[in-house]
Length: 145
Image 1 (cartoon, one colour):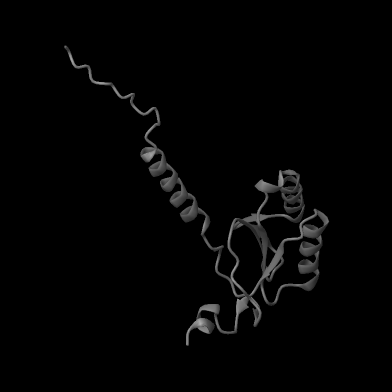
Image 2 (tube, one colour):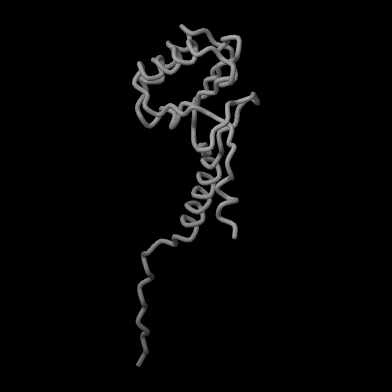
């Protein structure tokens, strides 16, 4: 008599090891690409004891002492800035900047300062951050014993 062995069916489950590799690589990519701090042009900023770092995608508006405006380091007129804010406000919320950073020179005219703040708020942004220079201890220094 001939002995027949039973053939076991192969498992139909796919090998997910390559998929996990791709997921971890994408995770690393997104973590590394989203942890950039806001950095712009160097200028003398007013100081404040309560200043904290700002992270994430930001729109940067700079007001110089002579009243010149810059948006993301490019010179811009007041009307063009208003139009740019309007266009950004019309985007879906996920595509809008997390913060609008406003850097004003310490000796900038208050009238220009208020005009820019009013312009940002008129277009519906509540995420305006007035950039200052920190005078107090850094958060890292407070944590050390």
